[in-house]
Image (cartoon, rainbow over all chains, first blue to last red; front, side, top):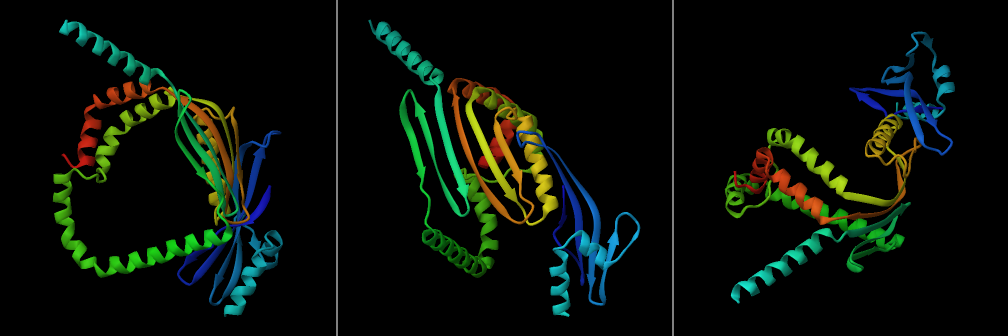
Length: 83
Length: 222
């Protein structure tokens, strides 16, 4: 099981970075039996700022999403440099 | 006396034909890709005779870069040519369609014809697969797309296909790579097939009206 950052989605001047949990069930012989993809949260970057949304319905801070998916730190830094 | 020679000729012809249809063809594949290097071999034999042998030797990094550069420049040149002759092309389209009908050049069939012929196509594919016996098959594939969600979905489809084709018992390993784009793996397969069943399958499928229509459309005879 691992938490991954998906491919960025562009919606006008808004960029959405999905965060998902990928669960791979394997046999002893290393054969894949099942794969489950669960969306967890998304980081939304807009020209005015950025915020995180959790699919669990609870409020989510930027720190919380960064804790969940560390590669998003680079994404945030890059967007801050571009602004 | 003439009838005797004729009968002997037909007998020999039938024996040769039966021999050709019943003697199995053997195909061995051994293809691998590691990093940018692709190597392997393809060999087709019949009655111990090698009919085709293709060796794919690993390219050096320099050769690979040269071939990539050549391909890229070729595409660029073609793009410029296409842009230049865009107007001419529009005028030619109508003429080429008529020429296709005259010369019998292959062209894509309509979606409706493909849908109509789908059951018969599935049947021929099933019959061809039945006539092919996999003696040994082993496949190891490690792949990753630019999106981990897509990688996971495609991986699921590939495992489903391997299972549906009855290859699950064989040595099939499909490893999803979630860290980025990647394609590595190797395929080793040995199979044998008799022409007899393939010919039967083709004859059977040609009796279906939808397939005949599809062929006519593809060849530009419709």
